[in-house]
Length: 291
Image (tube, rainbow, N blue to C red; front, side):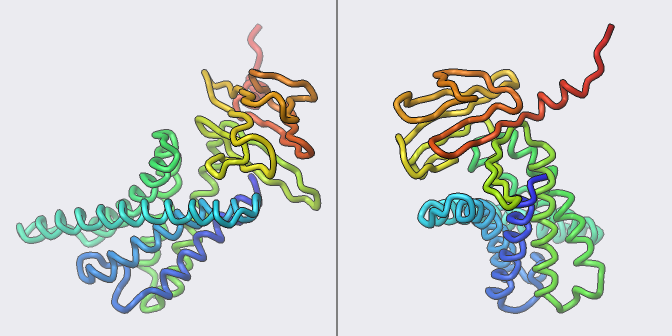
């Protein structure tokens, strides 16, 4: 697992929990039915902050680009806040309608669907940001157990009663851990950049990964063209596509306009070096040969 990414994810969750608690204004922040306004704002703020921080903190640490990080934070925060708030309102209307009919629904069931709603809202945000249904499925596998387990403990353990700071921090930590574990375990391809002193910057490859000087790129460089290269996935193979042959960029010391990457390939960009890794290559290596 990428230790730096794991720490960034946990830090994002803890900071999101702390900031949400600082903005908290009384009442139970996790009871949408009994404390609608406070719970709506607090939960939407928490999810929005986590989405914004997990998008911006890696940029600050690995690229040190404040304005790019700020843009990522604002866009992620607004999308997630809006989706979570909208989902919470719809959930509240549905639950109120069901309760008014006299249906006897156990409280644990209502709480389960409430935590499930927050997980879905956060996952939809990442799916929208990456324009990928694959990302939706990945994040759901991390957020659903994290929200439900953390939420059940917050609802049941007396340690969290009226100690909302602890509940915010605990929920943030669990969400961060769930996100880090599932993204790392389900990664298909990634680039590692070794910075010395045991520090490795890891860039996860989704459907399309771009590098260049533009702030719109997944990897923003200090110099070169706006778009230097793309790495795209085609039939479970990541393909390197160079866009500007004049800049110093090579794979294993040779220049290619178009090349299928294999595990261990070294991509040089000026003085920087990135090692490509693929989970597919590792799976093929571990499969037994049939005679």
